[in-house]
Length: 325
Image (cartoon, rainbow, N blue to C red; front, side, top):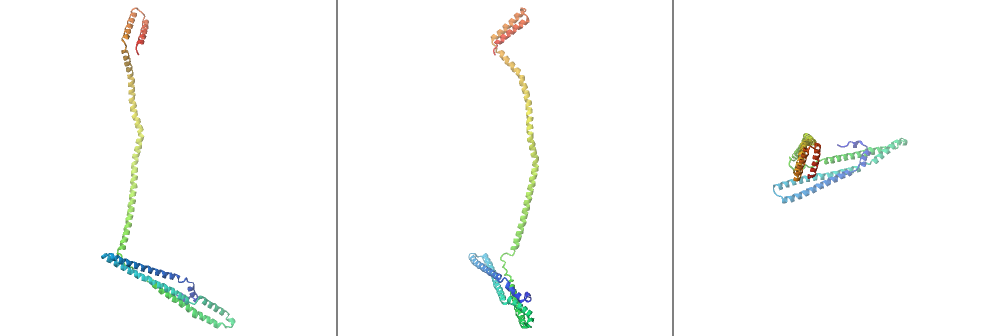
């Protein structure tokens, strides 16, 4: 659709659009980009063709035929895409030419502005000159409305029409690429991705469940092991008591043994004395016999008992002196 502003705007406004516009720099860059894309596609097709010829020279059979057919189909598609990219280059060039032609064809805004300024001034002083400037005013009006306005408006409309045609040419879509892979490959890939996501989710859920069960088992084991720990602590505390209870019977057994030792001491002493007296010599026995005879004689003579006791004591002491130790 053409811009209706070209017919509404003044000649100087239409001219000003081309004068202050950024220029065709962006359009030139676009054409260069399309040209580089076409060159890249052409180089890719050339390398693919060489690779296909070299591969088919070493590879034979049904697989080789299918590979050659697929490569040829892809190269043909790329060639069409190259042509599509190359077609964009002249379109960009045509847009650049259209802009240059329109800018050079419009009447400069300064000329139209000068016309309007002079016309307004002449109209203002025309009464003072007794209407002598009326012919000049008519000439300026005819120039502006009969030349400037139609010229700049027609240039603008022509430029708009050219851009509309070039835009339609740019809107042509690229050729469709052939289906070199299996038609069901995208669906299979999507199903594989979905299955992988489900498997990963299930794995994560199972791992979390296992960790939760392990944590619960460890907690139960710790709770079950608490009584055994208390029992072991009680057993450790009872060991000194058990040792004490074992020591009491041993002490009670020691008391009878001590009393038995004390009871056997007199017997041991008597045995020692018996052994001592039994080991007396015959001379000691004779002394004892003489001592007995003296006592008997003294008693027969009527010596008092006190004297007898004293004599016996002396005799016993004398005998004790002779007893060997």
